[in-house]
Length: 502
Figure 1 (cartoon, rainbow, N blue to C red):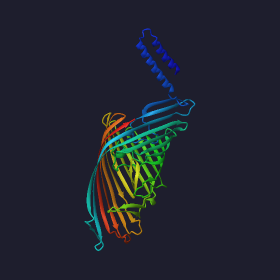
Figure 2 (figure 1 turned 135 degrees about the vertical axis):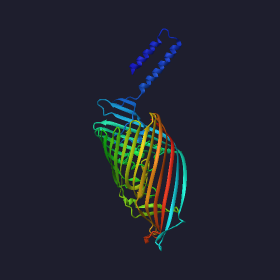
Figure 3 (figure 1 turned 90 degrees about the vertical axis):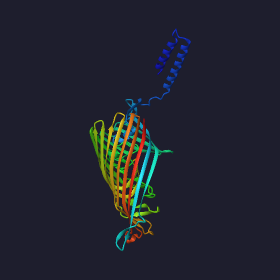
Figure 4 (figure 1 turned 180 degrees about the vertical axis):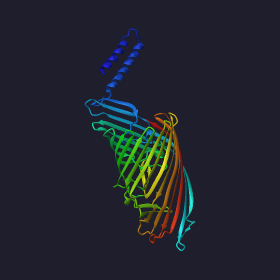
């Protein structure tokens, strides 16, 4: 540093002593010398490289994948393919070097949504004398509702990945933080991924933390779309994010993984009263097999999670008059949640891709948002579904996708009895069916890696039907009334979204 300073000062001094210099030239040279002195002082005051290291480099690089925790198509679309890389290189006798990468994005969307609902109830009374059901026009009826909503929604997301090449292999962490916003007020910041890993060999990785389940099917309508503000229909095959420990193996285009999962879930609210956590003493397991080729790719995935049936033994019911009461479930047979599924992908050159998904499963009905289970209904049901997505690279800047899917759910019969021993009241829920159809599409413009602007739309319809038998004298084991309920709901949304990345 002193040699550089002397060279700079010497060069400036020689210029000063030039015989033909004028007074104003001398003043300009003096100003340049003062500027050089200031810059050299700043360089000398800059922090030095930490002891034991000889170089810290900051550069732009490709978005790095985490061994044993590959990112979904939706995550790759959101983060883009660039990240900032900090590389710390050690001296010869120091520990291994460390690489830290960070990336993230902010997004905003102008979202319009319309929800149209039609419901009908046909009520019947039991005529004991003639032993037949008689239509009750007074308790029967139908109605409809139409709601519109428009919002400006936003999200902030950041990802930090750090890894160190140690004597036993690469060791690292992947931490991601997220906050969602809608209107005034601060968003709740939470971690959607908190993961650590040890790449014991180039093929074998041991990891653990909080992330998506191996049972998720990463293809089709839900698994392969960009979907910044669409994909709201119940057409995914995602058993939701969970804490787990995972062992992964990958060699060439083939990979395998197994995981031990925690089956507990937080599902407070009316369904479970004061119980914030259910299945607290249960575990689960998940596994997947993948093949990733240039033209064809696919996966087979499965998940099983234990269910504590004793914690699904009661539910709060809202009657037709809006009064509420707790009821005991007399014939619940909830033992486990399971799902098996398959996904297939076909690359049609550089222009298009086709993604297919199918799955079937059984277990308690759950509601979820962003991979988190927000409610669990003490009601066993089975499901199956199929979906497909086609994506097109229209040019280097434009990308488009369309998708369609169908899912069917069938519920078990459930008998309910008022939990108050002094109230003789019971119900039988039977013939429950739920069908969902949906389509979505989007077109996205990305002039540079750091920016995407798109227009998305989605339409889906749900049809729910069931029968409820009621008895105000539950002990006589004779149902007095029955109501056949049908609810049809159509949802349409369209949004203008923009994503800014770093």
